[in-house]
Image 1 (tube, helix red, strand yellow):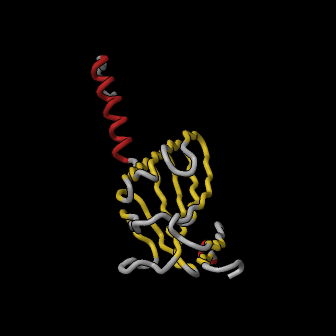
Image 2: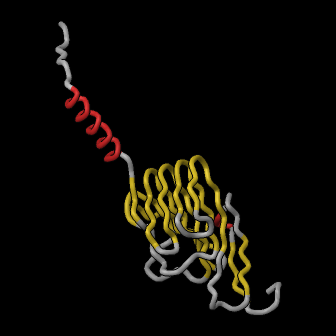
Image 3: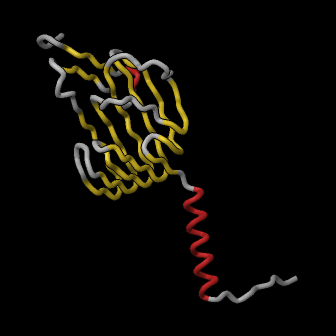
Amino acid sequence: MRGLSLPLTGRARRLMGVGAVGASLACSSCAVNQYGLVTAEVIPIAGGWIEVDRVLGAHLRLASDDLELSLGYSERRSVYDGALPDGVAPGRHFFVIPSWGRAPVLVDSRVVGVIARGTGPTPALTIGYEALVATSQDAAASGFLAVDYEADTPETSSVKRCGGPYPC
C-alpha cells in the first residue's frame, strides 16, 4: 500500500511553519515576574532564608530594580536576612515564587541561554553562560551584614546583622 502525498503550495508551507513554531512555543515553559512555570524552594538558614528559583524557558522580570528577560535555563538563589515571613512554609513551591516585598542581601544567578538585563548590578546582554553573584544592603540600615554563603550547600549558609564592631 502506498501513502498519499499532496503537493503543498507556498502558502500551505508557510502555515505549517507558523503552526510548528506556535506549537513549539506553546510546549515550552514561560513565566512573568513570580508567576508561571517556575519552581521556588525556600531554605531556612541561620539568621535568614534562601529562595532558589528555577525556570526552564522564557522568564520575564518586570520590577523597576530587576528588569530582565532570560531564555533557556535560569537559576537564582536569593539570600534574605531576618525571620521567614508569616504564611510561607519552607520547601518547594510550584507556579508561584513567593514575593517578599524587599530586596535580598545576596543574589547568586546562573543562566544558560540568552539573558538581557536592563537594571541590576550589571545591565548586559549575554549569550551562552552567565554566573553572577551580587550583594546589596538597605541604605537606611546601620551596621554591617556578615553573610556566609555556601553555593554548593545553601542550607549551611548564615546571615548575621551586626550593629557594633566586627566581629559581632
